[in-house]
Length: 384
Image (cartoon, rainbow, N blue to C red):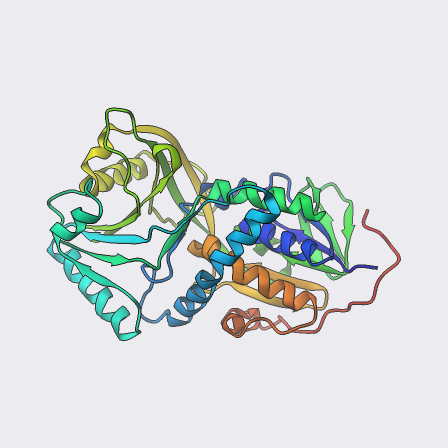
């Protein structure tokens, strides 16, 4: 009998795990009342370990780079399994500085990345506009980062849903209340029996297992979706990240003249309101980078909750026999989906996870977490 796996959480991490596990022949149930409706639905979709790099977070840079290297093969396999385009964009990223202080900050970033051997090319204002003519002529400087890619998050979620269905993943449209070895307890009082449960519920993961309490928190982010009208300049062909008087902002193109705009970040619990101030600031900063954006249509304003951890690294590994965790990815859920799903599948098989993921072991933060081998013995009882 195949190992029975219950994956809690239908975002990009949980869906990627469920798909790969089912494709490997495991008996998989994906538990989520509204799969694909959380942070993964709101995300900008940047796959950007280099431009997200920060001194002191070299382990995250290495992990992100390892996952980025897996993305082309992951996307191609998903395309074949789903029969549809998962939305990977390979045009690269440019970073722009608005004023002199922003230019100095980009210079420091370029120097830091250069010392780490990362591919970054410095750009003057003219070179910036040669790459992306719609950018403002008043920008001071920029960087070209061809290796940082992007993905259309909603195309990706649709492809994962189709591939999971084809692989035999059984959806369970219910809310999980708690996870323990051998079962996922549901909010209606019933349970889904399993050999291994995987907690991949993003910002809600902390409430599902006592070992995760206070280890994962919601980090609110507001995102706007825009669309170029016929009278407006088209969106840039690449992801554009910018510093506007020290404030980060990003603009990620989509097919059909779409543009995703974001960068707000608040420690506000599960407050789902999109604030007037957040929308105002995003549009103001975007216009400093891309003046023509004022002619775009405002299509959607949404807020999502990134799952933050104490050290900005995810938690991927065993919590106890029969319970795995894959959460805490913060801003990098899209980026880290391939390496996370590959790691969880290896652990389910009783194999070691890729070496790069050792930095994400939950026992670095959670003293009660353990790293046992799974009990692969079949059980007679079926999920209820």
